[in-house]
Length: 101
Image 1 (tube, one colour):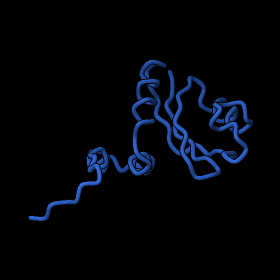
Image 2 (image 1 turned 45 degrees about the horizontal axis):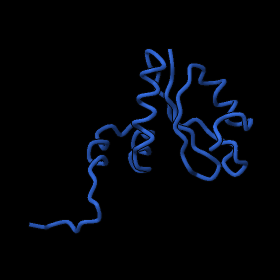
Image 3 (image 1 turned 90 degrees about the vertical axis):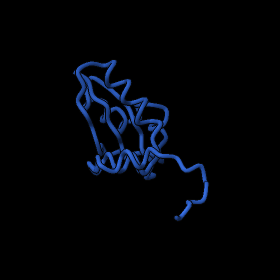
Image 4 (image 1 turned 30 degrees about the vertical axis):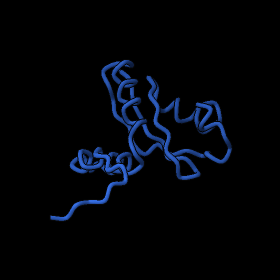
């Protein structure tokens, strides 16, 4: 069993990670023993805002990498459980003006 998770940091940023021991890993992040990103004092404390249980570490790591590439808006939809919004948030507009017909 493994987990992919999202932490909300004290500076309102998000951190995405994966682990086999969720409670221990969140504790490590809060103690400054986690990733370099959450070790910075301005990022702590962190709060677990979303997690998903996976069958194995490889699956959790693959989902972690996918979610790390998502926009803030898409991560927040996932955190809210607004799964219907996810496909629309995946579309990139590249700054082009929208055509109204």
